[in-house]
Image 1 (tube, rainbow, N blue to C red):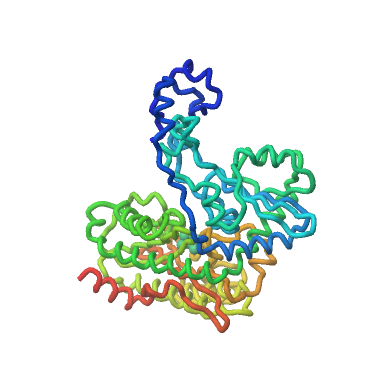
Image 2: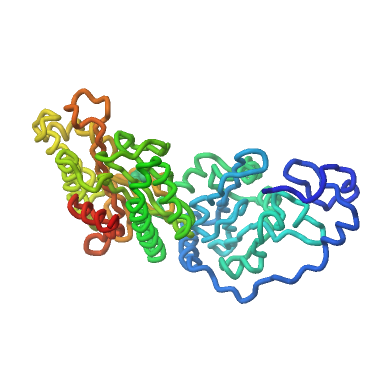
Amino acid sequence: MQQGAAGEGEAAAQGRPDVPRRKNGLYPQVSDALHELMASGWADTELRGLEPVAQAPYAARRRAALSARFPGERLVVPAGNRKVRANDTDYPFRAATEYVHLTGDQTFDAVLVLEPLADGGHEAVLYLPERSSRSNGEFWLDGDKGELWTGRRHSLAEAEQLYGMPCRDIRTAPDALEQATGPVRVVRGYDESVEAALHDKVTAERDEELTVFLSELRLVKDEFEIGELQKACDATARGFEDVVKVLDKAQATSERYLEGTFFLRARVEGNDVGYGSICAAGEHATIMHWVRNDGPVRDGELLLLDAGVETETLYTADVTRTLPINGRFTPLQRRIYDAVHEAQEAGIRAVKPGAAYRDFHDVAQRVLAERLVEWGLLEGPVDRVVELGLQRRFSLAGTGHMLGLDVHDCAKARTEAYVDCVLEPGMVLTVEPGLYFQADDLLVPAEYRGIGVRIEDDILVTEDGNRNLSAALPRTSRDVEAWMAELRG
Ligand code: GLY
Ligand code: MN
Ligand code: MN
């Protein structure tokens, strides 16, 4: 909790202008004797000889690509600020994707600036919160940022070793940005104070070009990123196993138990979940974004679990399995499941270098349309259904998306660079067809209503095809049953 140690009065600190304010705007009241006592007697904890973080060389290459795209321009990429939850408590901080990708760092309030050099290229400078001073008391009097309350930060010298860039105190950034001349662009939406310092120097259109470029820079993953995504998928597979093992307990409680179980794995093996887990039992499985996770878990129904562990470096998996809660699919559940699996297999086969991004979506949707016509739920011919997109009544969403630091990665990329692109080695995308029969859908027989099935895997485009990063989890209905039986003993 961010509570200062001192009282609430203003008087004592008024004659001491270097004493920082607390988050609530008041100066803490402390005696001179206490101030002096707190200022001395602390060990030197400076860390020396630090190795660069593993991402450092990769982040440097990404910055080089950014530099080449915007020669002669100052480029400003904020990490973002904490968001207040209530009063002096905040939501967990999650650094801006663009900043993480270009630095490997995750410090709140930080800003990366690419300063254009006279001879071409840029110098990357990292503005970071400096360690809090012991001598002026800010380390304990500042309840918002003082390290006594919030934990030790890296010194600027330490950060230089870790991230391979010159580091400066963030408190110098507003003046530096306001005084800078020449063309500037900023990634918007993360740090109002940075945007305010630049407001008369930037335009929305030019800033958007920077954001779009950085989104497209993430379309092809490097080997570090692929390794992190594999780690995320492996931890996610273990999280799914955890959930299967507690299905009986969840029946006695609710979907909440499953969400908490997966979160434990995400927090122990990674940083967090990469998005709100969808723990959707029974008819909740037909709701694409079911994150309330407060419903019952019942024998005989399906559980649609869509969840992903985010690594400590913030790369996330995005995996879905649809599981029979009692371990055995009913004949109708199996028929629907097998059709979705068939669609997913066709989709995954279409993921290869040189293929159009749209191919895996098109082939998977066609399989679903064929089955829906075969079952009499849509009137054929299949070509007409596909042409008019009628299967979408039951398949609802697109069949996948790019994956990386964001679950829906590269979302600002241009249509021609993403949706209309040709797949390249290093791209990672989800293939996630589904069929969803709403509980109140009068166009389908009653026994279909309330059944939702999605199967989602994370697929890396390789030189000669693809690799399923989430293949550790079973996908056929028989394999799912056997896996569940083994885990539940
Ligand atoms: N979990 C979000 C998605 O599958 O896109
Ligand atoms: Mn998903
Ligand atoms: Mn997805």
